[in-house]
Image 1: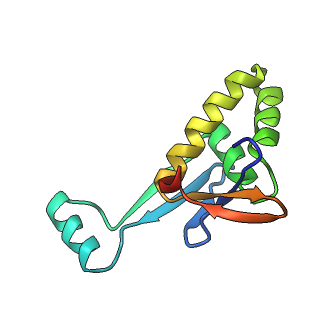
Image 2 (image 1 turned 120 degrees about the vertical axis):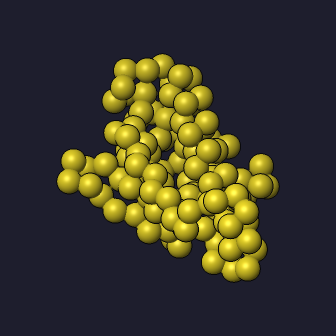
Amino acid sequence: MLSALPVRNPKLEWKRTVDGKIIVILKRRDDWLGKLVGSIFCVPRMKEVVLDEVGTMVWEMCDGKHTISRMTKRIAERYKLTEKEAEVSLITFLNRMAKRGMIFFLVRKGRKAKLKTAQEG
């Protein structure tokens, strides 16, 4: 898992605020099922997720070049955490983002990288 490469979902829109934070725009499905669920459960057409300083740092590293291990080390150094503390927090946050469809994981098997979604575990 630590060698996985988190990658931002290229279908999502996102922007940077004046103070440097990232806002990720999540849109509801626009097919009949999305409209049905949206009307029954009052799900808005779009939702903005504002990432804090740490979330912004993680989002920027979700570029397919930084492994989870490398991300853990950077977070631990910057916020003066043990690597285990940083690892647990990072993996929890990455899994939450993956379940929302914000990121995917590339997992290397041999020389090839395979895309792995949150549903695949």
